[in-house]
Structures are given as C-alpha cells and as structure tokens.
Length: 227
Image (cartoon, rainbow, N blue to C red; front, side, top):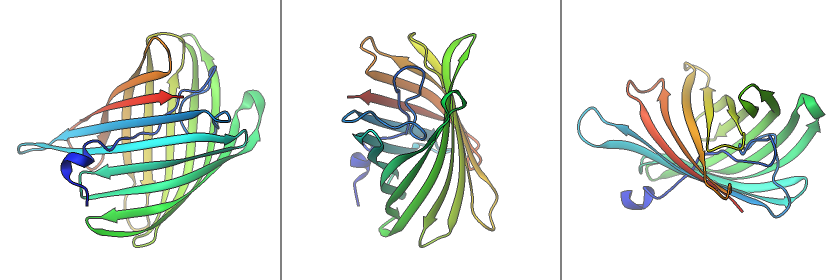
C-alpha cells in the first residue's frame, strides 16, 4: 500500500479543454492524433473532529489515431479504497449540429485496503457544443455500466456543462449519479470555475463538492494540461 504522503500526490479528475467550442471533458470528444491531456486533482473534506478526509486522482489520455483515444483513470481515497483503469474511446456517430456520440471501454482494478478485484466499465457518451449570451459552451452526458467483480454492477449517469469562451474565467458544473441494486441513488454535485493561463494550455479548476454521504462541503483543486 502507498503511504499517506504518496497518496496526497495522486491526482485526477476528468475534464478536458478541446479546440473551438468543444470541451476538455472526456466522453463524446476524441483527442487529435498525438495530442495528449492530463488532469490532476485533490478534494478535501474537513472531518468533524480534527484533520481532513481527502481523495486524489490522476487522469491522462492520448490520441492514438483520429478514431481512437486511449488513456488511464486513477483515483485514491486516502489509503482506504480506489481504482485504476485503462480505457479506449471510439466514435459512434457524429450528428453535426445535433451533437455526437462515442463509446468507451475500460478495464482495471478496484481495491479496499489491501484487497483488490477486477473492474470493468462500458460508457456511452453524448456531447454537444452550444452558443449562449455568455459565450460558447458544451454539454456532455455519460451513461455507464461498471462491474466491480467483488461487489455489484453500478449504473451511472453523469452530466457536465460549462462555458469555453476565450476569457480568464469560465463556469463549470458536474453532477454524478450512481445506483446499484438494493441501495439508494448516490450523487455528487461540483460547481466550479475554470481559470485559464495566458498560453491556454494550462487550466486551473477551483470548486466545491457536495454529495449524499456527507453533511459538509469539500474543496476541490484541479490542474489540467494539454500537450
């Protein structure tokens, strides 16, 4: 197992800044050939007693070809539990102004403490750019089935929308839901702001997180880079 100090540097999230009005969020958009993207994040919650509960993640993807994007997705909640997946994304349909669809296939492992099990994930994503009075933006919807072989099948539905205008700060909101048989729906909501650097290849993301498992609000800091 990794030490707590090492896990603090594990980073993620899962967002992308693409060209034009398309987002930097994974899903329906693929990377250009040989283009790469990384996202590192830290989310911290203040505990009722002293100290913090935190999770870190690292996400990366690379355009292997025009029709294939590959990458990995790693997330760790202290040393308690986490996952590591490799994935491949392919286009399904391009509907022009009506949006686009893509499919993603992932495989890896999920762990709790020192025990680990296989994990598989299939995702169908829809994405569409739009114009608003505040500038260009995008919306992405991801529907996934995730099989943790030691546990159960999770059904997930996520929504991401934001603006991608050429200015210093743009808004972003993410809503994630998950359901497994015999349990209530689990949800997370993360309103954030994206802060672009002068060269536009690096973006800082600062936001808050609320979920149904906690009564307090977490703070999230992420760093996105395009290469």
